[in-house]
Image (cartoon, rainbow, N blue to C red; front, side, top):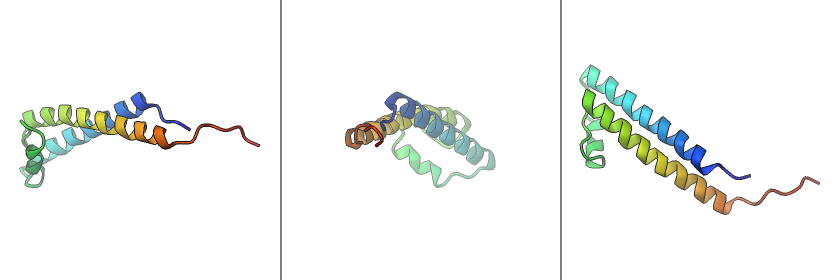
Amino acid sequence: MYLNVKALALATGALWGLALFIITLVAAGRGIGNILSHISAIFIGYQVSYPGSLVGLVYGFVSGLVAGGLLAFVYNAFASPKTAAA
């Protein structure tokens, strides 16, 4: 069984981007975000704020897209081809 690379890449990109967006909005609304502020070391321009949540959405989508695509590609490289059932 093989994975659809495009489908998994888009799904993980959408999920990770949305998760980072929502987590940043909640942290900015509550005034907390000490741990999340460390993400700015990786994602340039990201900060725990309302505009930063949009930056996180874009970065999260792109990084999830790459990670999901890479995961599916590596899985497909090691997956055995479909065989007929006996």
